[in-house]
Image 1 (cartoon, rainbow, N blue to C red):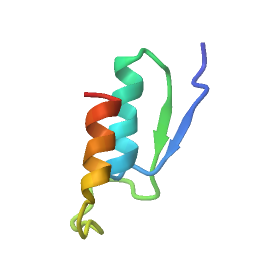
Image 2 (image 1 turned 90 degrees about the vertical axis):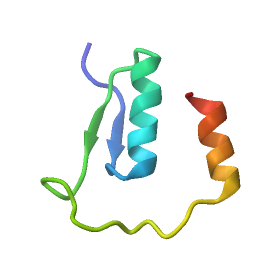
Image 3 (image 1 turned 180 degrees about the vertical axis):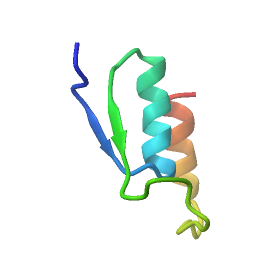
Length: 59
């Protein structure tokens, strides 16, 4: 079966989604505009509600 889901962006949200899909056996493809690892992050902070969502969603 070919990948049916495309994740655009390999930032923290895209990678957390990829982990969850992998655990559920759902095939996907992930793409990012950068070819390799970034040297910096756009991460400023994370909201408590976001952490709660991540905790309840996949882990």
